[in-house]
Image (cartoon, rainbow, N blue to C red; front, top):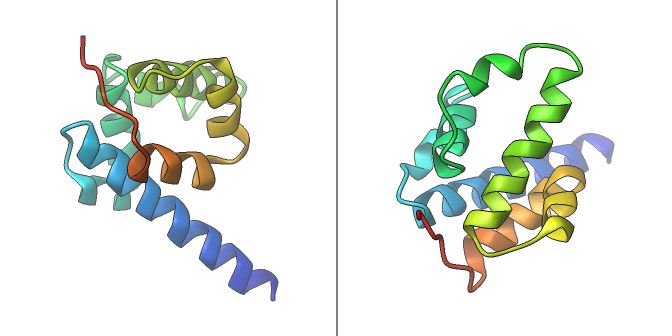
Length: 107
C-alpha cells in the first residue's frame, strides 16, 4: 500500500511539474530528467544555472529550494503561502500551477 501511494504521489508530481514547465515556456519532458529538471525550474524562476549545484550541498539545498519555490510562486502571481505549499506538498501545488488559471509572468 505504501509503495502504491509513493508511486501515485510521484506520478502526480511529475505531471504537475511537466504542465508547469510547459506553461512557463520550458520543455515539459525536462521534468522527467533528474538535475535537468532543477535547471529548468531555475530558468522558470529566472535564477542562474549554477543554483543547481547548491542542491547538492546539505542545508543549503533546503534554503535554495525555498528561495526557488518562492520565485516560482512569484512568477505565477502567488505569495508566501503558495511557497509553503510548494515546499511541503509539491505534488499538489505543482498540479495547481500546471492546471490552474495561473499565468506565468517572465518580467
